[in-house]
Amino acid sequence: MREEPSFKLLDSVSSLIFQGRFVTAWLRGLQSFYVFQAADVMVLRVLGVVALSLLATLFFKYVQRFRWSSGIAFLLSAAIFLLPGFYDFIFWGSFSFYYLAALAAFGAYLLFQKTGKWLCPSLLIVVAAGIYQPWAMFYWVPLGGEVLFAPDKSTPQFKRRFVRMMGVGLAGVFLYAGLIFFINVWVRHFCPQVSADLGPYSPHTAQNVFQKMQWFIREPLVNVLNLWNVYPKGAMAAVMGFLILATVLIKARRSLWHIAVFAVLAGLSFLPNLVAAENAAYYRCLMPLFCLTGLLLFWVLRAWAQMLPAKVCRMVLLVSLALIVVYGGAKAFAQVLYQRVLPSAMEWKAYKAIGHIRFQPNDRVHIICPDRSAAQRYDEYGTLTSHYLFDTLAMFIAALRDSGNDTGLPLLSITLPGETMASDYLMVYYRTVPDGSRMYRELGKKQALRPLPSWAQQGEQKKQAVFFVKTPIADRKPGGRLVTLNLRELFAKDTVDR
Image (cartoon, rainbow, N blue to C red; front, side, top):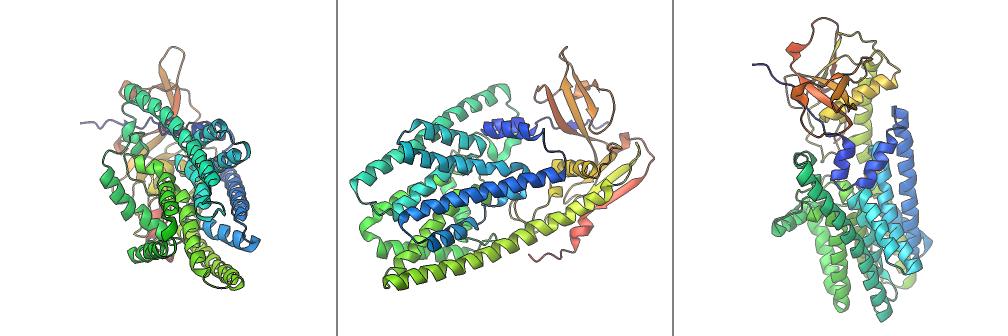
C-alpha cells in the first residue's frame, strides 16, 4: 500500500502566539525581512551581547544602592552574569532579542521606583512576558536584593513600599494570565491540534502541585545550586543547601520573615515553569532564579565575613568574589567553547563544504545526522543543529544561500539521530489564493505554484506557510549524483573534552 506523505503545517510565528509570546511573534516576523545569511545571524548575536551587557550594567548600578564599594558591586555582578542561562540566547542568534524581556522587567522595577505608579510598570511586565515569560520574572530579582540588603528593610516605610512593589508585579502577572486565558480558549476551540505540537510550551497549567514541587526540588533547584557547573551533582547541591540553611538558622533567627519573603520571590522567579503543564528545567528558564541564588549566596558570604573587622571584611569579600569570578569565567568559557562553539563550528564547516556544489535537478544529498551525545544537557549544551529534523533542513538551505549557490535544492534524504533508515524530505512553500484554494512549490526552485493535493488539506488554515513534506524514496526519479554528508561519522570520534 502506498505511503502517504506527512506534512508539518505549524510555522514558528503561529506557535509563538499560541505559547503566549505575541511580542516575539511580531519580532520574528520582522526579523524574517532582514536575516538571509549566516552573517546576519552574527549581527543578531552582537546585538544580544549588547543587550546582555546593558542588563549587567543596570544590575551593577542597582547593587551599588546598597552602599557597597564599586569593586564589590562589579565583581558580584560579573559572578552572577557568568552563571548558565544568561548567555544561552547568544548561542541562538535568532532569539537574541529575548534579552529585551529581562530589560523590560527590570525597567518596570526602575519605572515604579521613579514614578510610584503601578499601571505602566505592570503593562511593561506584560510586554516582557509577551517576549519570553521566564525572563519577564526578572522583575522579582531586584525585590529579592532589597529584602536581603536594603539598609531600611525593617522600617514601616520599606514594608509599605515593598508591598506596593509586590502588587505591581502581581498585577502584571494577572494581566498577562488573562491574555493567556483567551489564547488558551481560542486554541482549544479553533486549533485543537496545536496543543500536541507545543510540547512543554502548551498554555495549559499543571494539575498535580505535589508532583510539580518534587520535580522542582529534584531538577531545577539542583541545577541552580550547582552554579556554574552544567553537569550537576547532587552532593554539590546538598552542600550549598546546607550552607544556606545553616546561615539562616544561625545568622537570621531574628529576621526570618525576610528569608520567608525571599523564598516566595524565588518561587515567583520560576513561576511560568512551575504552573506549566509540562516540566521544563532548561537553563535559559532559570536565569532569574540563578540571579536570586547568587544574591543569596553573597548574603551568606557577607553574613560570615561581618564577624571580622570592617577592613578585613571588605578585603575578604573582594578576594572571595575575585576568585569566584575567575572560577566562574573559566568554567563558563570552557563549557561554551567545548559544548557549543567547537561542535557547531565543525558542523557548519561540513555543511558549507557541500553548500558550494552546483547541483543538478536529479542530484540527491543524503544527510546522516549525528547521534545524541551522553554529554548533552537539554537542547543547550552538547547539542547540534542536526539533532533536529527541521533545523537540519534549514541549515542545509542556509549553507546553500551563504555560498551564493542559486542552483536550487537537490533531493534530500535524511537519516535521523539513532536511526539507520533514510527518508526523503522537501521544503515546501504554500499560500492561499483569492479563490480560497492553496497553491505550493518546492522551496528554492524556480517553478510555478501548483495546487496543494487534497491529501495535504489538513492542519492549520493559514494564508501562507513554509513546511516540510516526507515522501517515500521510491517515488523519486532515479539518476543524478549522490552526495553524502555523514555527520554521524564526523562526530563519532568525539575529541571534545566533555
